[in-house]
Length: 143
Image (cartoon, rainbow, N blue to C red):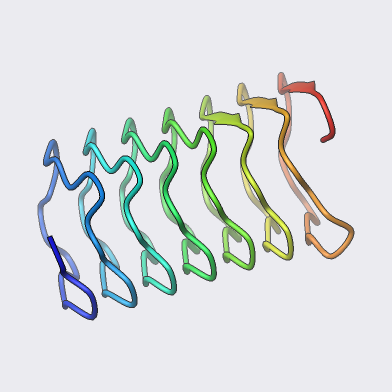
């Protein structure tokens, strides 16, 4: 599905399947994507401010430069997701699964990572991570 540039702000998309959809530059601010299946979805430059993505499957998603400020990504599968340049400031990634993901230049300021499993991910020198809450994180690989 090509939903690039679509205004889906505040939409209830919980439990939907949008695998491989193109949501480039779409507005999903405040949207409910709880438990949604978003494998390999294109979310480049997408506005997800305050969106609820808890329990969503974002395996292989391209989220470069997406705005996820204060988004709820608790329990989300972000395996092999591309998050370079994304704004994750104030986001909740509690108990998320983050394996083989890219975070180059991402803003993780104030992000909650409690109970998160992070393996073989790339956090480059320009990644901002001030005030990150990180109790009970499982780190391995090049993190």
